Image: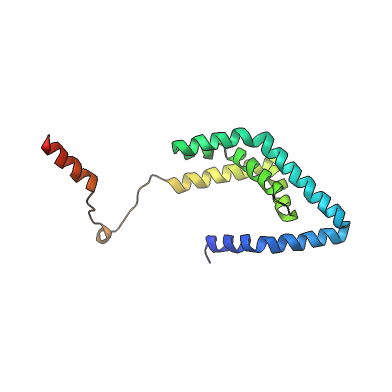
Amino acid sequence: MNVAKWLLLAVLALPVMELAAFVAVAAEIGLLGALALVAATSLAGALILRHAGGNHIARMRVALAAGSFTALEADSTGSLTLLAGILLLVPGFITDALGLLLLAAPLRRGLGAALRRGAAADHGDGLVDLPPEQWHRVPDPELSDRRENDREK
């Protein structure tokens, strides 16, 4: 199975795992305690998104509108803070644990560096090496229109 299938399976299994984790925590500390804990972590996630998220979301919107993904890659630790806030905001103990892990500065810096290295490796030089039997010329209709317009003038 490729990565996309595993990711889809994990996303589909997450609600079941969250429910099992909630039942286990509620059995240990009580239903009201578990509900209070979920509410507290959701409030913490909202506060993180409010504090750190506003400016970062605006920067991401500007970078995406300009088509500049390098600005997003350079600020991967800020993106990870946003992801931590979103994970804390989603009710559930598994997502809360992942969100709290992302708030740990050393782990966030290490993940950010790994993401930057991965993004740099993926972009490469943009060269696609095809065997000669796969080459073929594709006419560009815009170029032929320009040539015809230039001849008319």
